[in-house]
Amino acid sequence: MSMVQYTNLTDPRPGLEVVRGWNDVEQVVLRSPRGDYARVSLLGGQVVSWRNDHGEELLFTSSKAIFKPPKAMRGGISICFPQFGNCGTLERHGFARNRIWALDEEHRPLNHNDNSSKASVDLILKPSEDDLKCWPRCFEFRLRVSLSKDGDLSLVSRVRNVNGKPFSFSFAYHTYLSVSDISEVRIEGLETLDYLDNLIQRERFTEQGDAITFESEVDRVYVSSPNVIAVLDHEKKRTFVTRKEGLPDVVVWNPWEKKSKTMVDFGDGEYKQMLCVDAAAAERPITLKPGEEWTGKLELSQVPSTNCSGHLDQPGII
Ligand code: TA6
Image (cartoon, rainbow, N blue to C red; front, side, top):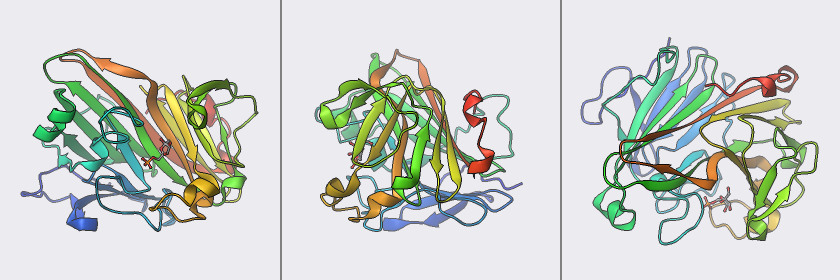
């Protein structure tokens, strides 16, 4: 069993593998006994790497990524909070992805089924004085990132209204999946759903196709989606299975060729090797009264495509 425990930075405990990442920011390494691997940066609580037991990287990172706030590194899984999108004076996709998180010393089991066959790390974000000036809400955000013995990656976010007035927020796990060739990829599980098209002022449409395939720019919020969806990579013969809880929507994004060329931190042809599939609460904000807590979970697994039939029928329990 490989187990990574939480600790604080000045008093590291045995078992916690910390490496210095870009800009000297700490990253916590998680390993499974069979050789799967994940790395989580304290900058943004961002998962910056997830590899299977063959050493294949499963998350996309741009070769032109910039590892410096105020924008999150282009790739991995970034935490979009307290907003998903671009609203008012808040940073785009919220400030959480640009802040330095702390290792959480108040490690609390999430439920009785939470066993130690996972390597996990607990992080916490509390608002700074500057954050409170631009978003005056008393919150605590706890993030647990775990790697199971089978290499499944899970992220559990808990946002608590610590005191004061009710507040609302939107949220997303902005997840860059690595794919062989976007033209060979399809998503199953979003058929017949309504979506808001970000390319046409969030106009509402209903998905018509059997499965979602890609031949041009896509930026959509599929609303009230099932909790399990699959991303099939035909060329790799690999399927990513996404399970979510507490997050009603799924955002699907690929910038395609023209948009890619306008992004400084993204290579011109890199849109072919990535697909963002984000578990999100984007359409309707989540509201917390004082003392209330919200939980949003994401679990990602990858299986050979031949083994994936039946995954979509399973309930989305993490
Ligand atoms: O995933 C949807 C989206 O909001 C797109 O509109 C696209 O701009 C993407 O996120 C990336 O956002 P970022 O701020 O990380 O460049």
